[in-house]
Image 1 (cartoon, one colour):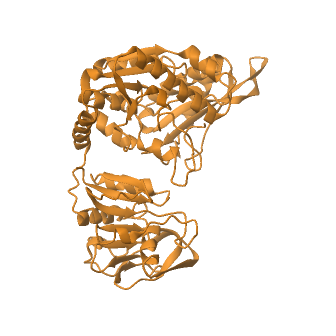
Image 2 (cartoon, one colour):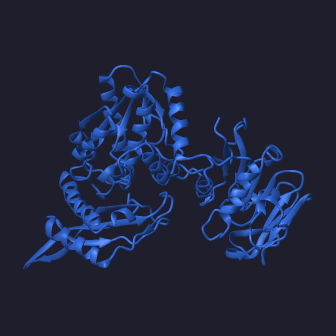
Image 3 (cartoon, helix red, strand yellow):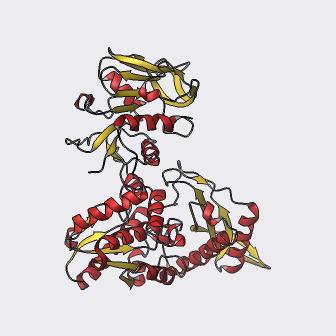
Length: 506
């Protein structure tokens, strides 16, 4: 059984970052909602309690009875997690006179404590809380403080339980990674979870899970579905059939290029031209969620139709990755965007779901792909949404608008590669806005569409900054699009980051 750290998510924006930091230390971890603590703790070597947007005494606060796990496993409470360890066991947590937010410097009270091993006096940490611990319970021992926070870190005597009121997972905490590494050492995990070990264990699990069953897989041409296909192929070989659907919303020449790319992988791929079906279903639809649902439903229908042409298909493979799961449903129940490759399948399909990448971040998926020997240009492709250009044509979708966007996007991507910018960008694409504006071409007045260019830098899609592309490059792209794409007379550049904006506009 895979040894792991379990992270209980109490709703913090940085919970996923905790997971990333732990995995960067070659340690497998899983994030589960605060109220989904498994009864069987087998294989779990330690538990991290995340932060939260709530106060521990707030009526809306997410609560878990921590007495169920205290003393059984090493525990590290972070911010709200630390305050919960105090609040539930007789200590006191109170509102701060002023919110404690930003950099602070640690005073190491007990440098020999296992959690503090190697942490320097005065090391910078990041605070972000409106409450503070004012009284610790009996047997709680302070191991670090700051100028404004007496109880910056504590250790409970007689058990392997710690709490810190700062955030070791964020970049601003200088030795935060070392603190997490210390906790992993306390948990007794060897730290040998790598791309190679993931492949070995996942292929073994897939063989056991699927046996001689046959699987149908949705290919999109992107890294997620491609890596999923190779993993499944490695596990079950000819029992995998891949379906690549051309819904008419792919990039220019994407269908032909992707089919060619898959030749070297030895996959059994069936190409399906379903453009007419999707354009008909999307006619007149403007709401982005409805578009996503129509496209997702269309995929399911096409797969169902193709599956019935094949014999004994029992599973649907999908390239779902962790950010898809997180964005689809938070523990607060707030849906940010639905993802067509997340969730259950219609019962009529009678297919079970297999998602071997469900708990991986995008950069981890890429490392796995390279370890599998896949071509670098397949692995380093920018993410492309499952609904394709359907959510980059804002408003209603027509074939004419899609053609305009395909041509503009092709110019943008081609020049990005020509200027050697593609590899430094996490994701880029063009968006067709549902408005027209006045322009002048030659001596004639024009009234045509606007193209918005989007490019962001990121590591895992949970957060993203807009890319500071050279002005000369943007000018070149703008001129090329306006001069060569009929129907466009204006180009703008999106300088919004995530949060508060999302990477895709819809």
